[in-house]
Length: 486
Image 1 (cartoon, rainbow, N blue to C red):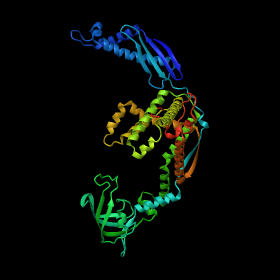
Image 2: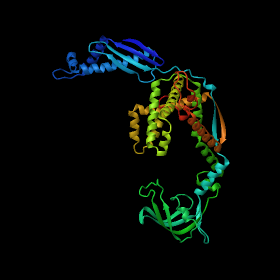
Image 3: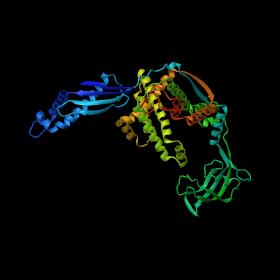
Image 4: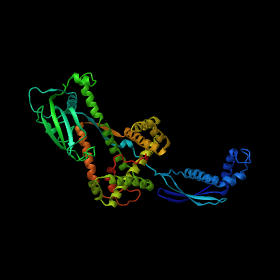
């Protein structure tokens, strides 16, 4: 085998590979001998069919199989000998071949860039730790007390008010005709709960037990039943009883009703639970800050085909979203010229590829692996989203390597991020829950402002990042890395 390098520009490499006719003939003969051992043809004993007969019968099919394997093996060998780490699947083109003659083909490939990973210990980050305030806990206790409230018939005679529970019979009709599901007897309705159609409960405030009234409402335009959506309806309502509600006392008895020993333990559990609800958001925030710093601290040439593929994926998603968007959203999207929008999306693609390659290199250098148990757990979680079809989902992942990669890649990325966070200088800052939420909202507002100010970057030399990319493109996507890059 002869390997000749014909192009070396940036990350692009091209090679010409020559396999001699003798090499091809040897491979064909070897394959024919394999076939001969098990071949069965009329007039010949099993395993005794002459190779010449087999060549006449199977020669072209065997030659095609041999060529395919020879090109695959030799191309991999050529890349290994030249020390090439392909960024993507190489492009192979057969230039010359005739039966009995040499095989010549070309390999075009983009290599992975050399990445100088910075000192992760110099990264400084602040991790916000949200903590529930006393008022948040008290509000949760009030809600819990209301959930365990009791009700008793009102004493004396008075009109209904918000917070009361009224027992009603009702029959609904549209255009004078009753509709399915619009009738009930002795229905307990808490006034002010918002559980009925807008306007329904308001018309039952200020009534007496025994009153018979007509409640006129309009079903929302997005109501679940299409035959009622947007329609005017009349409900004939009989108020049978008015009950006054009393929230449960906030004490040890309430705590015991929800499985706690006492009120103090209940408060502690509520505080911890409220904090846990925001743990993933706190994690996402510190990860985004980390990726921002990694993006700023590293600069290397990107394989353009990887960028092109990522851009095409982003653009396809954008086009699909426009199809399903409202007229107002679609009009807003069309305000920006297409070439400007594409320029911004290309910056996003560049960021994703850059961070994906960087995280992959950190993982490679530190031998970071995803445990099979973690992969199995992720697949099982996905399968649970399809009740009754779990086995079908599991088989899908077993039979589709790309689908399995789509599960493994995010797990790998999170492991690498965790590894970097262990090395980085991360300080934790406890903040009230309200302050934490306010910080997240402020972050989002700042990102939106930067997006609006961002201008499309001009074409730059491979080693130089456009300023707009540094300041704005990264904010388009918090996760930042493409599927499978890391």
